Length: 328
Image (cartoon, rainbow, N blue to C red; front, side, top):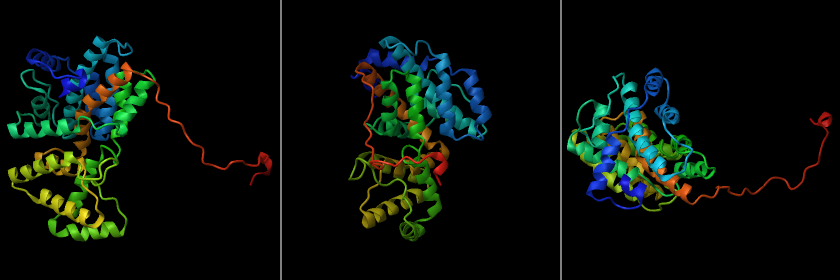
């Protein structure tokens, strides 16, 4: 999927193997960045750590300001690989665990899960994470992708564009929503409390996280796949509570407000059942979306025109000037 996004076509066997090897053989993230993560992991939001760490990569990349295809692709592959290592290192460090370096004998998703959990992941977990990565890789001109393209349109560099995109994704109305969903589910606590909780939330005009979408007026097609994964992991861990709470809440919200669940809703219970810390959810979104951002940056660079929306003034038509000494 990553090859397709970056090259606009599917690879043959030789090209795919070469691409995989390029991801595996990328140099490790610089020690200065790892030291920054360890020093700040207890106090900083994970997405803030990711944003700053990605920004720091610019000092270790060559020819970022060059626009030729070869330099761009080399930096793009390094960035995808380094983002995985940085995200996994943030997960480890926040948990008080020693950072683990990637292995060259593991594929991308296997490597990421190995660096997070310190052991090789089972096939089911790898397939679940692969699905989540594919689902989150791109989604038209969402806020973070548009941010990346705006930065690129000024002829800024790749790292600047994706760093800005990470800042946009961090917000709870964008990528940060999956973390807020899980906090909401834990607040509800049990399936018997769902209806009472929803009644109170609607009465107080509280936003129900994980519902509604600026584009979709039907059930987010990505949510269908993650719902299956949430159900699977509930069975696999002998804890169906989070899926059942989610399922009941989804039905009640639709019955009362005719609002559908979005991609964030079932990703929350899926990640939680997999043993991923709540505060790290949005980083997984960023890791997947990095490929999409890079692809959009490349497309913008290849046919660039600065993005400059017009603004319409809606204030008073005219105002009387009052000398400063006479102003109240």
